[in-house]
Length: 256
Ligand code: GLU
Image (cartoon, rainbow, N blue to C red):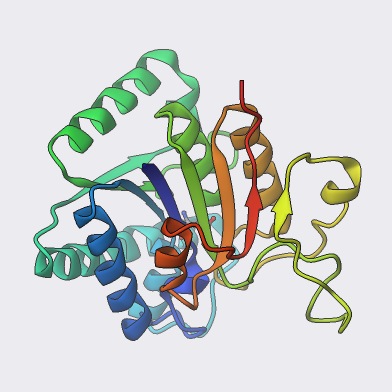
């Protein structure tokens, strides 16, 4: 299978913005193993800004664009350093790709992006994609990595997009507020009822929430790519997904 795995900031870092070492080590080990099994993996990783916050010892993510862009520049290096170090332990070679929304809207640049990705997969490298936050202001940005994950997955004909987040999946109500909230295991049609469940915002360090995840699901389902929202706090969920166990919320693509 060709699988895009999107990892959210809250999965990679503690609330302080510092790296969650145990989590990231487990994730890199399991992703390496899944690659060794023969699956093609592309990662979309958030965490640049969060890791910049941690590295510069700030108490919280700043609100102004310039500070966030500067922190992304600091944090992106740290992020790739960690991935390079951990994946190298399992003999996998990482490759960084940074894009903006404007790059992906431009036909020529999008085609270049696709060709590079296909070539990296052919070389058995592990592409790790993030938005180029240092230059992407709101006018040209994709804006969140759930959407970026879906754009990547649909541009390279992936079979599956996995969104690893700090929530188990899509619930019938906000599980932090409603004790009767139930996890929805399968979605075959994104109707108004499902879309109305998007509700609240995401974590403090990341950008996305359930709204961006459902937007990603819409894009994937329309382009023949399945999507799963699963909890990144349990990296072994990735094995379960590969073994077709029921994990999180599965969005079934329309099959043509
Ligand atoms: N590109 C952002 C970062 O690396 C994250 C965007 C998101 O959380 O969706 O910090």
